[in-house]
Length: 325
Image 1: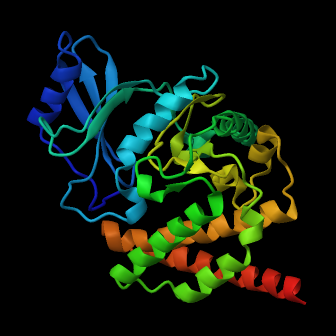
Image 2: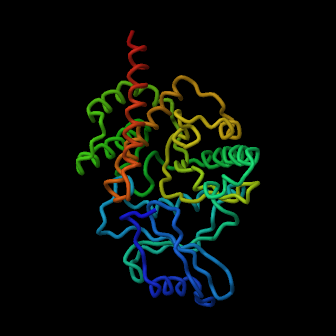
């Protein structure tokens, strides 16, 4: 995937990074990994034959969405929190550097996982294998969400943190809407309507009392597997401290029965369903912005985002209309 945010580096820079963290095992070769949408990533092969993964944040000169500021810090911190539980398969972080002494942007090195992304091999897997992997993913995701965090909000942005979940989530929604307004992205739904409807549902968020570690991006591209078991969860950059129902496995427009069974939460209460629907809306807002901020080759992501936003807001209006009667 081509994206404006991919901050590609020269061989010389990649080699210097490898030397900094592996001074006794120099770089033999490196190759760009192309599945990601945001950061540029490289697989570095060392002279010993060992392989490691390098991720480089976007250039400071490239505008990013508000929630994406300082997310490499959020990623490494979340991975370290998860790694404290040996039952969560997460790559080991070898080093994080935001000094800009070698590379003009923050970067980090991590362990290369065994296997491939589920997205890249699922067409060659039997359905029973895919279902088993989804179920195990639910089990792993539950362990991630059991990690308690200091506050609600975005780990890398203190100004978007708080003691209560609703004000933090509302601020996250406002940030997305403000990003749309700043770049004249037509969401096809008015900002005022979204925020007015959200305020009307405040009470559903008030039952969320504990800030949990939320990965928020566990889709097939970020699930590594050997075709039978989950070997790791990658791309923790969008992690936050909040409501576990933000997780991909709880999206209301694409119910993942196997994931929910593994997670141990096959049915949601009325309040949980409403919050999950709001998290669909939030995700749709951000999807609609990606094409403008990253300059993708097509407008497919924008079209998908505004379509989903329109559909979910229509559901929201119907539900709120029913409760007003």
